[in-house]
Image (cartoon, rainbow, N blue to C red; front, side):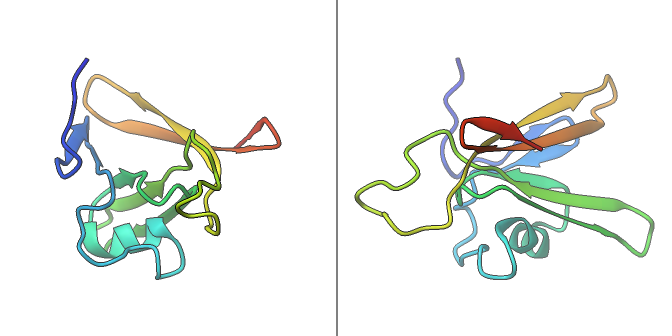
Length: 116
């Protein structure tokens, strides 16, 4: 098992993985967390800090396709310290090939059922 510090970006193949609290200003305000992550990271990236399932994709001028994701959580959705929030249950599965290219399936859990 590897323990990673909250502020340590990781790389899973060509996909950057962040907790989401690395950016000092909230990234959840502009539309959704994935859009905010896109505006700051400028590369394909995933975070989980906001406990919301979202994604945002854009093509760059040089034909790179960038997508950012935020994942739901697998914890209590309305804890005492934050009972009113926009959280949802969810998780992501990342598949890698031998060259580090990746495919992301970002799932939401609603009423105990997995939604894609």
